[in-house]
Length: 299
Image (tube, rainbow, N blue to C red; front, side, top):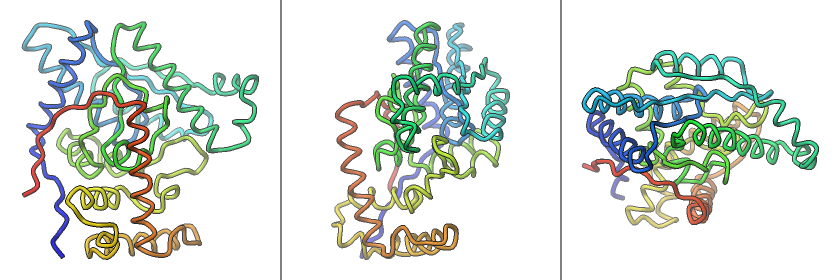
């Protein structure tokens, strides 16, 4: 069976392409920069670094002052380390930033949405929507646009984001990069290794991680969705050696970590990814922020 090809990039070129895209979006709206939510994870950190790099280049060339403003919005379920990591990124980038706990906002929703507090799932999505409201309002009052932090695997691969929450943004700078290339770009931009390799988590539920929720990592998402785009059938994807090798190790890892199996076969995981992929397309029909055209190769 022919191999599934994965994208490659020239980091310098893609960095400039994403920066140009953000600058154009800002100038077209008559804004003076971007607002971004910082979580301490690799996605938000890389998106922020790309925007700041582009703004610095533009400001030097055009003698303007486009600004990136970071907001760190922890709730009661977030780890202190997440806040510290987010703050360290803001300081490293040299951007203006603010830290505001949203716990009181979350608690205030008990008067209108008490049912959401009976479910970690619904409460988590509610927290994401609260953050989106704070960020979009900050962007409006700052005369800036809100930049999203979702990558290709999450947003377009399996739709792993909250509708009207972290998906409600003006632009989506890293939406063309799978998680693998986000990490590659993060290393190119000299972000801290601890942040680059931090376990992905939405930070919306106690003890939550993306791997715990999904049962597989984003490299699996990339392989399955790329394979689908390259013409492989569901049956072929379930037997493809690249996918089988990756997925079997993940099934074993999940059982060793959590004491039980979420999936028991490669075919089950492929089916789950494809079902989520279809759901992601449905979400895109509702909210689909502009994304940059970037140069990727499949040699």
